[in-house]
Length: 442
Ligand SMILES: [Zn+2]
Image (cartoon, rainbow, N blue to C red; front, top):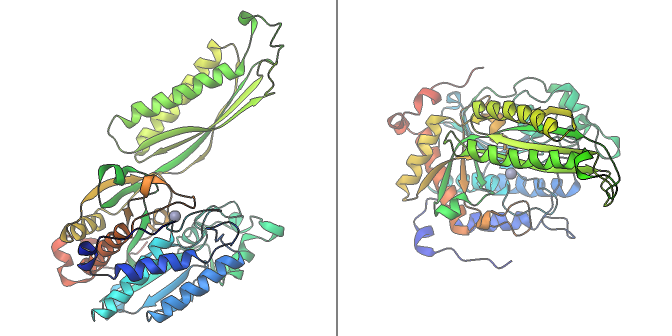
C-alpha cells in the first residue's frame, strides 16, 4: 500500500519524532510470514524474530530488557526516584492471521519513541518508565487471548496453563519457551505500577467519521455470549402444510430481529456503548426440501455499563420463551456461554490525556472500547487508560488496516505529554496525584 505523507506543519511541532516512529512501525510490519502479510502469531518463530528486533530497538534506546514470569517482554528505564513507582506503556506485537500493521505494534513502538524523545530532550523521569510487549494478546493457538496481561494480573488460572496447543504443547510450556517462568504465576506479579497507558488504533470508524484526533477511552466493554437453540420438527417441505409446521428457523429469525432491535433500543438510551450481534447462525438439517428442525444462534453482546447487559440478558431469555411458544417449537436452551464485566478506565489518567491533547491543540472524544485490550486486565492492578487513534475506514484485523502517520504521531505526542504530567511536580495541578502518590497496593 502507498504510504501517505503527513502534513509537515503539524508534525514539525510535536515533542516526538513522527518519522522515526512511523518507520519503526513499518519496519516491524516487515517481519511477517512472507506468504500472508501481516502475520506474526504468538509463540511462533516469526513472533520470536519480531521480539528479537524489538529487543534490539529497546536496547538501542537505552532500556534494560527482560522477560517477566508471564512471558511479557519489558524494557526498563530507571527513574530518579524509583520508590515512587513505575509508569508503564505498552501493547502487543502479536497479530491475528493476515492482520494489519498497526494493531498492537502502534502502542509498543509509541512507547519506544517516547523513550527516545525523553532522552533527546534530556528529560529524566522521577518514576521508572517501562515499555511492555504483552504476550499473546490476540486469541492464540491455545484458545486464549491476553495471556501476558492475564498472567501479570494474577488471572491466568492453573487450568488455563494446561490448555493444549499445536502438537499437544501446554500453554505453560509455551510461556516457558518465550522466556517466562510459569511456575511463578498465579498471583499478581506487579504492585509498583502507578499508571498504565496503552495507545491503540480504534479499529472502528467513530473518530474518523467525527473528525476527532484522539479517543480517550472511558472503559472497555464487557462481553457476554449467549447460545439460543430452538427445536422444531424436520418435515417434508413439499407435503407439510404451513399451519402444521414446527419450523425452528422462523423462531430463530424472529430472535435475531429481536436481538437487533433490543440492542438498538438500549444503545439509544444514552447509558454508554452497547452492541449485540447474532454472529453464529446454524440451521439443521440445512436442506432445501426439509423444514428446519433446529436453529442455533450465538449472540455476542457488549456493554460499557453492566446494568444494560443485565437488562439485555433478561429480555432475551423472556422473549426466547415467548417466540418458541408462538412458533410451536421448543426452546432447547438459552444459556450464557461466557460473561465478562466492563472495565472503567481511570478518571484521573483520562483527565491527564484530555489535558495533554488540549495542550497540543488536538481534539478529543470520550469513547468506550468495544474490543478487548490488555488494558482491561491492567486496570485490575493499576490506574489504566487508553488512547485511540483513528483507523481509516474503521478497518482492522486485515492487511489494509491503516492509520495516517499524522494520526499516529498525534497519539504518541499526547501520550508523551501525559507521561510528563503524571511524572512532574505539576501533576498535582491536574488532580492525578491522589492515584499516583503511592504505589498501588492490592
Ligand atoms: Zn490489539
